[in-house]
Amino acid sequence: MLYSEKVMDHFANPRNVGELENPDGVGEVGNAKCGDIMKMFLKIEDGKIADVRFKTFGCGAAIATSSMATELIKGQTIEEALKLTNKAVVEALDGLPPAKLHCSVLAEQAIKTALADYYRRNGVDPTPLVGEISGECDGHCCH
Amino acid sequence: MNRFVYADNAATTAVSEPVFQAMLPYLKEHYGNPSSIYSIGREARKAIEIARQKVASAIGAQPTEIYFTGSGTESDNWALKGVMESARAKGKTHLITTAFEHHAVLHSAQKLEKQGFTVTYLPVSPEGYVSPEQVRAAITEQTALVSVMYANNEIGTVQPIPEIGAVCREAGVLFHTDAVQAVGNLEIDTAAQKIDLLSLSGHKIHAPKGVGVLYCRNGVRIPNLIDGGAQERNRRGGTENLASIVGLGAAIELAAQDIPARTEKIRRLRERLIDGILTAVPKTRLNGGREQRLAGNVNISFEAVEGEALLLRLDMMGICASSGSACTSGSLDPSHVLLAIGLPHEIAHGSLRLSLSESTTDAEIDYILECIPQVIHTLRAMSPVWQG
Image (cartoon, rainbow over the protein chains, first blue to last red):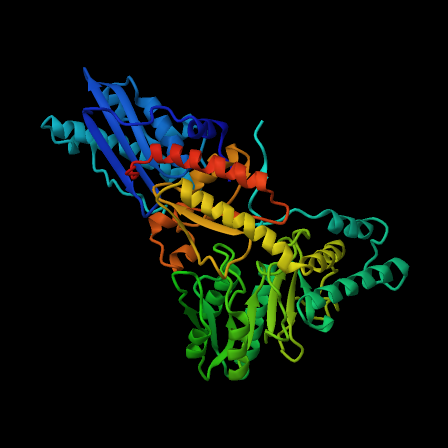
């Protein structure tokens, strides 16, 4: 299995690792049994992602997709961030091995879960805006 | 510039210089087909028979009991499927094996189940052992074969093979052992240890990849594996892998020499490595018992860290190792071996296997001990499940 240079770069030097104090939204997806957990922390100002941090337990692809996803949404409006797809993350990383595509799905879900949390904290029902999020792995990583 | 430390000798080994030198003439001047009657054919035939003699001597067998194959996996497939097919004619349809065999045995057993055979998978203890008593209790009137690995490839635990051999012989049941990891590490004597069939592989003992052996005791009948040639006494047709067979002969002769002295040196390094890691890194456990264990095997789980990320980080520092995490196994689950000894999934994902050889040095152990705490610290710092 070969990772692209971009994946290895984001794995070796992950961007935006850590936590945020007093975040406006937090989202955690995956589970340890599957070997992947992603947690995203958002700071939101004037409807934009002012800052973002992540913590990930998982393989090289899980760490790289988390890192890339945070880079892609930083500075974007909430509406733009909600449109981030796992496909966009994969493309930005110059591709992922097929067995690792579920990691990009987790990254997308982690961001949506954090944004849903932000809406909830502001008294807004997130479901019509964010959609249903399973918050679990998609069945590709474990039984 | 990073160093390069190869600590994955249970995966494969480098071809050693004496093995390489022994092989060279059979790639160049003595390239004849071993079945040809002229001089270079006869030279090739002679070399194969010398290699067969060397394999037989190394494991306490007769040359007529040695069949060269393409891999340890092929040997395991042939042993299990061959014995069970022969046994079916006599109305025996039960196979006993263990839950933590190599997939070469496990997947062969599963295939046999699909064909109507019954298979008992003996559970293993939390330390990674099966007992002769478990084997005895599982044997029924229907049992044709028991297959228990000599030493486990992931956690290095050495099974009580002579005792299991005795139980099987007494019960009139054939006994196969996958000795791929054991050769060169342990004294193997198929006659004294009452082993009827045994699989081994060249590339784990400094011979090239693509050559293995099935030992099948004289008098044990198994069907031919490949039809179409008289090679390997009609059992496995196809022109022999001449140079690799010569290499395997040279390698096993060296591997069977000075086992106690050689393994003692490796064991000392292993103990230093295990103690060093367990002392330097909290929330860490050794997988598999420490006493009856292959001299070069270290298998450790680190909480809150995923194995593939660990391997990639170590690779960036020039260290080659392996892991039982799902992400590196190419399957969806973490290592069946670690699950068999009772590890929860999340701990099994964070396992690391380091396997040493006689060429491993103290300086390399120092370097590994310098790198691992740094790597674990980095990964735990970004892990949402780490409660440091």
